[in-house]
Image (cartoon, rainbow, N blue to C red; front, side, top):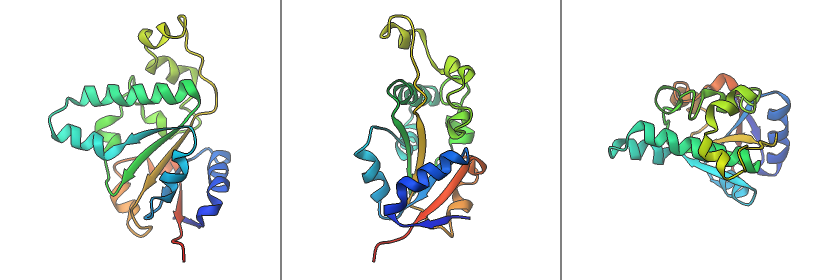
Length: 175
């Protein structure tokens, strides 16, 4: 069930999801949430690009490595990690999530910054730029956006992302 919010309630929704230990999933047909987050420190994962790259023949392992690099960047600089689903149901669970690159833990705020997960995704090459270590601040927030309507999102996204780890918000259309 999606909770309806106005765009002006976005910060409160982010806070509410965080307090509940859930990843916020914003259903926003206007794209305004994406725009708002682009003005903050945000690393953007274009989900549809992952799918299109796969369809064009890019190896899934290469796509996963790109996702890992974006995740490490967001961890390192305490950015938001925005997963933009747009109007797609990209299969993260079955295709792109993998324990040492882009683990399903990305969708669990209680697990993503655990030492175990961080150690699995950080590579020696990531440490070279940081004098042999990577400091991961505790400020990473994963946010998912979709342009699906509130009546449709569960049907399309149920096998793509772990909806049980999400708090769903429907951003009301402006009058």
